[in-house]
Image (cartoon, rainbow, N blue to C red; front, side, top):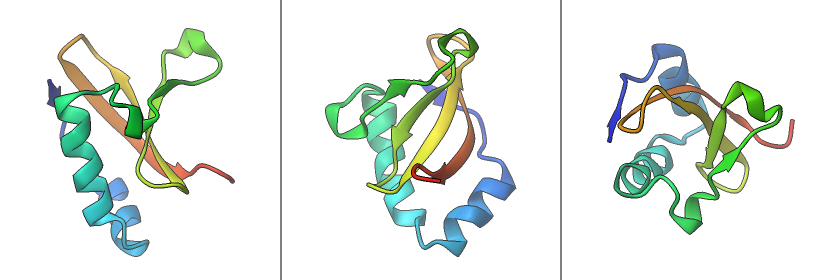
Length: 82
């Protein structure tokens, strides 16, 4: 699996919240198995948009979509509870 380069705004967001190491750890896990149980990967509503998320930590989630079965783009990281 390949992940497109992370947009600079997302990198800044992660740095501002001290999430870089957590994100990198989860990203490695995601690359080895995008549906690993600890990622809590889920298809978001409305499902027809085909947007997915995985857990960065208990508070933050990464939003992504599959371009293909081997190419993923992470489009956002946000507070899951806002």
